[in-house]
Amino acid sequence: MKLNERLILLIGGLACIGAGFLPYLKMELPFGINSLTYSGERLVRGLLDAFQIIQDKNGKELLDMLGKLWNSTNDPAAKGTMVGMALTLAGPLIFAFFGLGYIVRAIIGKHYGWGIIFNILFLGFSWLMFFLASKQLSAPGLPLNFNFFKLANVGYWLAFAGMFIAAFSSFFDPNTKAKK
Image (cartoon, rainbow, N blue to C red; front, side):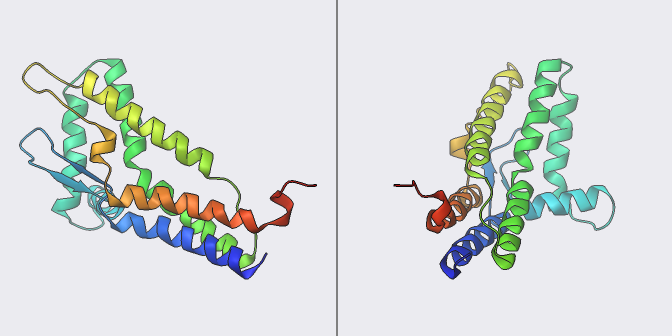
């Protein structure tokens, strides 16, 4: 594996990991919370607070809001949508693991595996989950309008770009070029 391939793969991996510290989603929320800026760091802090490892009231806001949404309905389809949204909200961690894998591959000299297909499928899945959440979780006095493309912030788009940057490392691989 050439140095330029390794550098591109390393840059893509660093972008995916760094995106976890930036705002991933910015939401205007119901239940008395004006807005919530969500990031991978906030997710980790919320989970650590939930398991009583650290205390962090800011990280706990998201988990409290998700708990209120979960308890607000008994509809199985709405609960399924919330599980899908939870997977979407785990995105910063998923992208960070991909980024870590890219960094390890760059260090040991292995070529880029896959990620673009996952990246595009994850984008579509995220949009669908937020769209369904808007329809299924809205109440007469509480209309929700979750448009994923309006909610996605710099952290999501940097991770999205990092996955594509990592894929560019395979363009330099002679085994991926068309044979004449």
